[in-house]
Image (cartoon, rainbow, N blue to C red):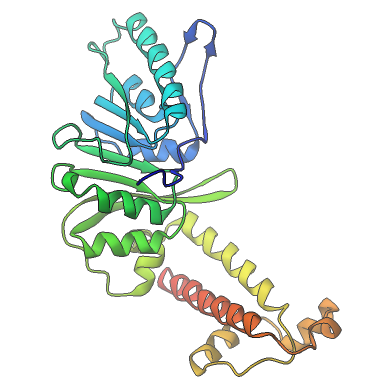
Length: 304
């Protein structure tokens, strides 16, 4: 990964932290709590881009992890993780009599460029959350030595999610389950991935997730509605003198308008501003937006 600007799990909080150390169970953001919920009891986890190390610590505290490696490409975040791990170890000693966890889970902090320093057999579950989809793909590509020894990959890319799904399908992975959460106004997708066969026959399954579409997921429905409103709002502000639209876009344009376009511009008071010829860049942008709107409506129809 070679200093790929690896984004990390920074949307977290600690409960009961003071100068004496950790006093309670780590409190995760809604997003990272959803990520942690995919981890199966007794898992040996590797958290890639661990940052503060909160996810491994949380999983150790609730007794779900049998072992954990907190990994990060940067020394600074790893030092913070080590500090929190030491606080967890003090907490674990104090709670050694807890019946849920007679033997505290060991957590190791390890400097690693993605999966490069992880060896087969050290972990059966890999977590990658809080980074872009292209970066997750590169980490997976460079971590091929781990593909067959890891039984579960818990992925939560923050962008290019369709590209991640396509990479998984092309490289012998299967999405077992997905979840979508809304955290502080933003939407996140989490995937539970294993080795296996996955063939998505429709492009929208890659774009929005077949599992979520089949489930008619409420959070996905909300996300699609907001995206539809956003794209329609932008399209309404494009010029009156429009370049020729490809035939495949005609129906999409008809679908998006809730009123006549000219009337909408008059009501918005933007006719004079938008009467100028559209630039080539604007035309390309509008075509891309109309294509995006077509995907949204197709997904909404799928969930009816």
